[in-house]
Image 1 (cartoon, one colour):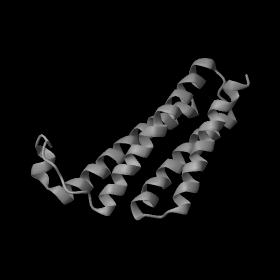
Image 2 (cartoon, helix red, strand yellow):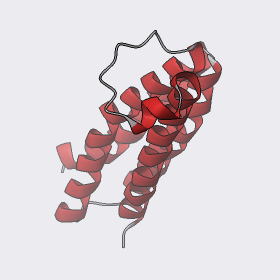
Image 3 (tube, helix red, strand yellow):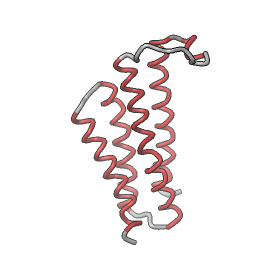
Length: 131
């Protein structure tokens, strides 16, 4: 298994971390009955941390498909290298760091970490564009 595929597997684990972190925060605010129900009722806006976790989850799922597609294209094309593996780890590491930064409401560093993760994706995509 390639490094990039391993990173993709850990990215799937991180996806579940995002999902469960957001839903746990919302359950703390709205209650277990809300969580176990159909969730049809109108709700008050989420508390700040719950709202941040929901937005961090949405942000993760905006970049995850691009990272996943990049990894799969690398696997099919055989163009994986030390650079693409480093890019994959950079993306994953940044996404791991991003979640608590967003939950804590850290503004500028969070954006820098996000952009570094985008660079990681670029390190995976670049070799395929110029092969």
